[in-house]
Amino acid sequence: MREESSPGSNGSYSLGEFLRARRERLTPEEMGLPLYGQRRTPGLRREEVAHLAHIGTSWYTALEQGRVSNPSDQVLDSLAGALRLSAEERRHLRMLARPAERGPIRASQEVTLGLERTIFALDPSPALALSNRWDLLLWNKAAELVFGLPTGPEEELRKPNWLRRFLADPEVRRNNPDWEAKAQVLIARFRADYAYFQQDAGFNELIEELWQTSEAFRENWPKHDVQVAADCHKRWTSPLIGEMEFEYVTLQQPDHPAIKLVIYAASPTTALRLKELLGFS
Image (tube, rainbow, N blue to C red):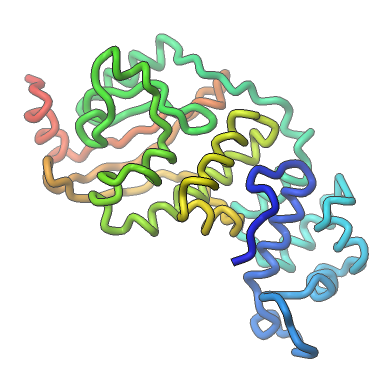
């Protein structure tokens, strides 16, 4: 497996690595290109991408190597088409290419009183607040029960990290038979969020840490896969609780976009079982 020289790379180099990762997943056959010469690396060659995007090879090479900044909308659209990017990947490409257009996003760790009350009011549906780099800032009793999160005021001083916990906690891995697939999805979502905070020192320190400690992270991070967390239906079985069913929702406040409210809205049957276990009347 080819490794990035630095897992926390940012700026135009991150754009170049995303382009390289996307061209390496395509083959000449599926793009209708003729095969010629011996190929030392997987995927398309730079000149083939340039041909498909109708741009110069030297210019594309400079873009992939981080020597060109601020490509035009037309060039980005052409590259997106040539590399067969999904809608999420197109947005990610534009974010990497035009970081100045997004404006600064304050990496807040502050949970407002309104958000705090909302999280606790959502019991028995698990709810939690995540920071920009997925530190758990606050969670309710249902989240403690369902996800085995720390309990009590002393324990809450230890703010776990959602991704670190999933990748490193043996119990989490034992309780998720499809752990590898879930890890791949979580890392792709983490990659999508990272595009907003490439200059955040804490974010890059966490990436370096995960690169050193997690084999799954080292395997998936260089792929530059991106996913946006979308509302969806979730169902799984817990040894303690039994079968559970939720609607998964993520929300962000306009004045605190760096904080996510994550809600697992329990089905009536699951809610009743959680109420009983939590001792709610």
